[in-house]
Length: 369
Image (tube, rainbow, N blue to C red; front, side, top):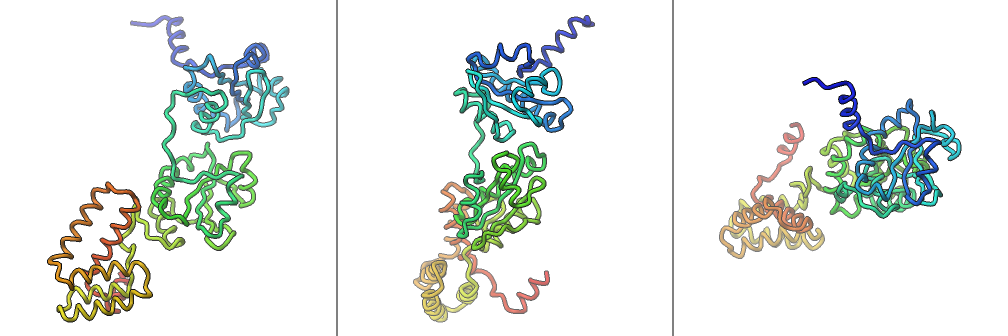
């Protein structure tokens, strides 16, 4: 069946219909300031940033279409028919976003230009809910001009900061990886993974201070210093984890949790390996050595001592049974992260009792590999 030209045009209009309201000098005052608040974008058709914002702005209007009787999402071609409106409201660049209250008073919108930021702003200002579910909670610490110095310049913490822009494609690609890294390091109180919207007008002074000229720019603020260091490593999860482990002195693993090195002490590893292969009378002597060394070796040494005591006191098959029990707990991952970290450390230390001691020759061979 062939469609008539008029019917085809009508169907196209429905499919391509937009929920963004077009404002011009002829209808502006009859809509804005008549009791209903709204967000208005002043744009120019040739503007690249406006083109980038356009699909997000359409999604924004769709998100509030069910409450369009309570809030307006509109746009003005301020370089075309709406040019007088651009002049009236002090528009000097594109796109410019302004929030208009129900009485016609207005203020600039200076927040992020991603969908989540825009939805959150309108929901708060108009007291309405969108049809978009709220974003999942983030483990990345979000900074702004008011909080940046307190966090990034805290000399008691190591802080990694991404300077991003909502419209930046590379930033969007980095975000899920960076969120994984933030989740992995969440248990480390002095190793902070943070982000700042450096394209937000109120934050641009921070970006200028640190010479941010492109997005994303990543800076590391080491503990004990207020000077930023440029991060020039890879942007995959493994590279970030390796970098932060080195700088923060941590043992986090890609994907979360602790690595196999967490909790291990070289001096006690050597004792543990000897202990595993030693005769009963020698084990008792090694336990005494471990007790003496543990007095000044820190809390992790207590785990080594406890394993030795269990074996010396005749607990049958303790090493194998305990290793199996701990591995089962770690595989289920049903405990709180802090508890899983504790279990992982115990598992790592237990493994030291079944590993061959590394001689200097073995260490050299391993290093060459």
